[in-house]
Length: 206
Ligand SMILES: [Zn+2]
Image (cartoon, rainbow, N blue to C red; front, side, top):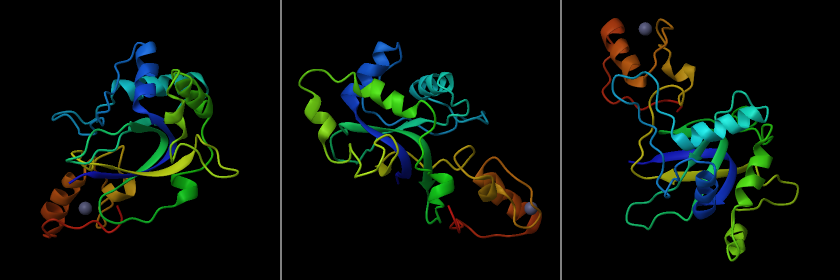
């Protein structure tokens, strides 16, 4: 199965994004969606070089707690996407979920984010201007093109059942309030400590 993400941010041609990254000494994406999986033995999911760079850049612009990431759609059997997304806020959905748009996906981009968009899109070369005008690149009247709302489906990328992608409330035991780093640890705990044995529990709200 794939990953479903709702995000706030901007859409960018992969060719332009990769040129921006390379010009800043960062490896390009090649249009390949970054992995979100934890490395076995590590409690911290890896942060790809591209997101690491974007966060450092946004921190320098005043967004010290940036959680920016790059998302790239992918569908089995189809060619690679020509576009990717730089997000400042995102929600990943495993099964079903309420979304508090104002709190989780605020339409106000953080400091430096609109400038980042301008800087990246300025890497478009002559002959690429049409790439910047396709559907989804620009919002409607009164919308900020740096903080548009998108849904991205990414095949071959799994839902990350761990922090920081999951909310703490999704990783807390309903019986004793213990909090875990990973959904599977919580399920093992529910079974071992409380005798709750439901195989492949479908989450109520994530
Ligand atoms: Zn418990």
